[in-house]
Amino acid sequence: MNRTIPLILAVALFMENMDSTVIATSLPAIALDIHTSPIALKLALTSYLVSLAIFIPISGWMADRFGAKNVFRAAIAVFIVGSVACAVSGSLPAFVVSRFMQGIGGAMMTPVGRLVLVRATPKSELVAAMSWLTVPALVGPLVGPPIGGFITTYFTWHWIFLINVPIGLIGIWLATRFLPETESMETPPLDFIGFVLSGLAASGVVFGLSVISLPYLPPATGFITVGVGLVSGALYLMHARRARNPLLALDLFRNQVFRSSVLGGGLFRIGIGAVPFLLPLMFQIGFGLTPFQSGMITFVSAIGAIGMKFVTALIFRVVGFRRVLIVGSLVAAASIAVNGLFTPHTPYLLMLAMLLVGGFIRSMFFTGINALAYAEVSAEDTSKATPIAAVFQQLSIALGVAVAGGILEISTSIHGRSLTLADFHTAFFIVAAISAAASLSFMRLAPDAGNAVSGHGRLTMPKPLEPVRSPGE
Image 1 (cartoon, one colour):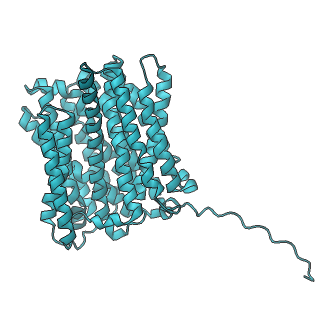
Image 2: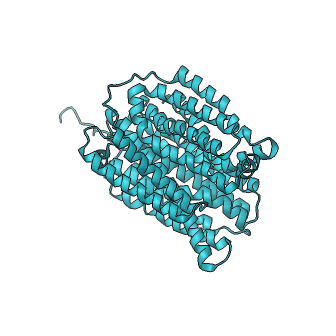
Image 3: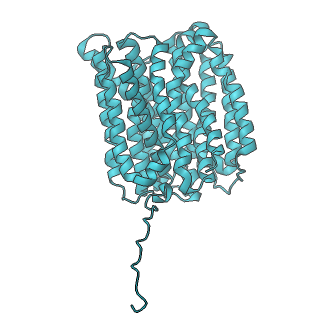
């Protein structure tokens, strides 16, 4: 496998994934500097997610129309411009608009980068390639908080965004130098009605869930926005049945393998979306640790995620997708539930070991479901499959944060007190149970599902020796 391509794409995606979480620990410093409150500044986090939700559906059409390589480089450039705009923002409206611009670049970088990888990699090598591309999604949210705290403490918050400039420029140069050329394709006219409806649906759900879980606006606003998103989603389903070339080709869900990958993976990501939200809060509120101390503990999961990529392809080749994903989803869910057993008296080495194992398992699982999504998708349909998978990922992660935040709020309202360690334990157990339910989706897969990608079943046994026959026989 040519590792150059996935590594180049992974660097760009790491920049995006880290940036989306590194800001969280710097909100108080940024708010003080631009004369607003940290609660109000969380609108900037939401604006980024809304931008992703709006523009991800159009990424596949853009890649076909203008060439995936060109769109990928342009997306990095837009992300750089948005980063500089964030660094020079002096007011809340300017910062929110700048984060929205960053989201436009991020909405194109992730799905188009994955599309470039799928088109440039033979299916038999896709699991190995995806194992490199999966790392940024797992590492970014874990290393973001400690890096953000370090930069804000010892430098200024502006550097959180300015460091994206050299990284992004290097990414553009590497993409120009090493990524394969991709020609633009004949594309149907843009499904504008579908673009509007899908944008309202995805952004409404994401924004509403963010408001519900982070109540800096009245909770009714969140429920109304979610309702608008769900209605828009229903209207899109009606539109897609009549449109000749709908923006999101939902007929791909007729394929059991694609459906299990997207829906089962989305269900599991609810738990994964909750972990980066719950774990640092538990360490800081329940254990009394500093943000930097909690970040250094959670960082070990990132080490596990990186280390697993060296053996992932072998595991899927030997065992096959179905069995690995069933067992992996259950074990990974258990690794989430284990966090609910941690107390300030738990030895740190034991916690680090559990987090390391959890990072291993989750890395393997996500590599598998990301590769499985393309196992039975034709080359012509990859640009249709990519935005669908990306939209469901964003929605499930946002839902994970909303579920975790809702559990904590309900728990505190029932008991009439501030957050305690028991509230976090309850939240971990519930989101782990939701993630474990993903295994039901993978149980419906055929035993040979995804064998063209994993190589399972190609391991041939040596032929038995024929008996020696005498000349007269």
